[in-house]
Length: 550
Image (cartoon, rainbow, N blue to C red; front, side, top):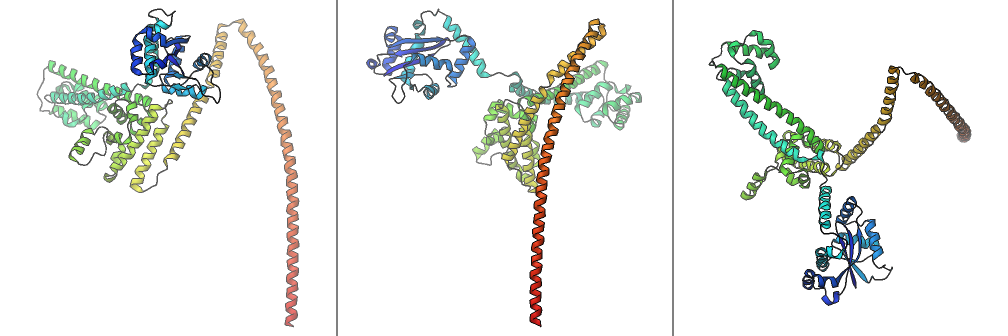
């Protein structure tokens, strides 16, 4: 049996014929020994045909289809032209050796060409790869390497499918930075409180918020200069007039020591730095919310942006989180407690990072574990939808949230929740309706823009005062009048046709109504006749009874 070999390169498809296999005996060691020597290998393997790719884009498409196990039309035509034809009902006297079994099975399904992929074929293809430049005569040295480098870059780029708007690394970095900012802002705010308390210790008891305390420390500066003239500004800062009066009174009878102007300047600068950090923290939180709505909208609408971002950062990426089963997602973040429980043979933890969700807090103590299990299940579904769906929508997340709310009511009040299949059907319908609505909204946007452009051009012409602009509307007006008359005629024709159709339907309805009326009258008559017969029969019975009584 003749063996043909299909070899895919960065420059094109090549077909080789392997002969003298009986001498080698299909021994892998013998093939390995013959591969290194071109004289021996050239006697066994010979080039039959070569099909170069048309362009770099064509090469990328062909290699992508080969990697996915799909035979393209070009490859099919190449094989059918250069291989012997397989007759129906008869065994083929040859076989095709391929590197990938997937594409071999697809070739056999479509063309009925028998394919094989084993160690022997791989060894021969290794020799072909080693001596490929010697088989192609017109190939210049260095051309194959350049083609391989270019195709490798484009193939890797296409496989990664890089999307700027769906980079979960930004979410991971943002949530890490947010956690560190929380710690730093808290420690810096405590340092401001401690530093300024040497000068005005009573302020720390009146104002509890760190950001507000830093604002007031910068505004008050020297407590001896604080008077009732600044009461309105203090009320604006604090939002409470009583507190503002309390601060002014405390400043008058303060027990703190006086600070030099240089010390007060340093305190003010540090308070400003704390304010800037806290404002940046707010902006970063807003950025994280918008990024989560882009990357994982369903997970964010189900469990919240912060908890969802923590889950993604702990798993490493959204793809890793989607691959996690719900049991792993449930205890994500409680690994230490899990392994400690396994080591000591104690109770394993019921929840990890999802404990920060409001659903776990709202559940009763005996239902917290059950709620965590159910919530982890829904989070796993939401993360998979976000990871593998192309269209970003929050419909599924909202429906999953409704299911969790219903489960809470079921645990507390015993209200039976809806079935999952019904909820998901409703979510799919809503998502499809949203897509159709978006398409219909996008469609009429073009003509409106054209109309606005026409209006602008007309107004410009009127402002410029061109004489031609005065003549053009008349021509356009005449054309518009003709068009309107044609439209009116068409409308009149349609009305006439509708009226005729209505008359026909009325006639048919009238005929049916008359027939129905006649049938009803007949029925009434028959009923009256039946009633008369029954009355006659009753009269006869009464007469018989009377005769018997006499």
